Amino acid sequence: MNVRVDVSIASAVQRPLIACHDLGHVYDSGRGRTVALDQVSLTIQPGEFVCVLGPSGCGKTTLLNILAGFVQPSHGEVLINDHAIAGPSPERGVVFQDYSLFPWLTAKANVGFGLRMAGRPAAEREAVASDLLRQLGLPEAGDKYPFELSGGMKQRVAIARALATRPALLLMDEPFAALDAMTRASLQTRLIDLQQQSAQTILFVTHNIAEALVLGTRLIVMSPNPGRVVEDIVVDLERPRRRTSPAFNELYDHVARAIGLDTAE
Image (cartoon, rainbow, N blue to C red; front, side, top):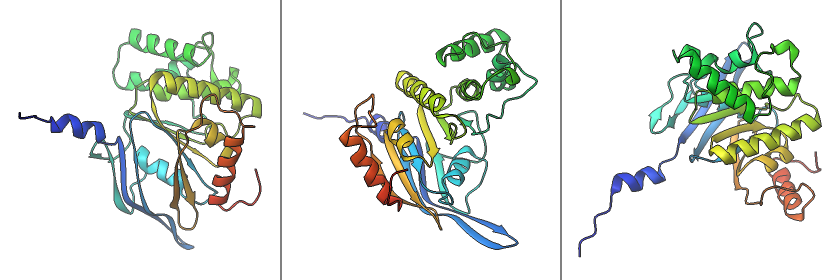
């Protein structure tokens, strides 16, 4: 009996969304050369929530900027769906720490901005923005301007804007770092819920070990000078994750040792 295997389907299942091969980046300045990244190779599968963790200077934001298409690597290659990243694209949404909202636009108009630039009709922009704001707990904030919103509300608008174009990859650069502890915990929970409901692929940069363990399904641990991957850890803790559980604290200590910390944060 002859059995035919559909190679195209099998390869599609195994193909990563993101593939970085021997990635490196050097910054040149009047003070000399800084090797931000060196020999970084990793893959990200669709639906993963990957947290990139490490101390300042380990190149995690440089890695995010390369994936976003803001920076071209000095060497190596980075692919999304087997195609080289040549610049910014709607298939990669970005959320920054400082919100980056347009102050002259309402929350709803900020969320729909990318769709507007893509020439999508007003009715579609309205529907998408309203739905995302509802999912992120801001159903009544659509007509408010950024100056009328708290920091946590602004960041939720920024997340909604990044998701409006339905990107294949959501890139988040320490988006909760400037928020108070209670707001931060609330947004972490909302982000987890959103990711689980939509299977959105996320790369989340942080220097906070506990945040990475609460959020991620996988941790990429980096070391500085130059920035290199020192460990790639699958986080198999059940959700919701309890920060006081023995398993959580055991993994916390392991990650802390991997990045060279002797004590807890």
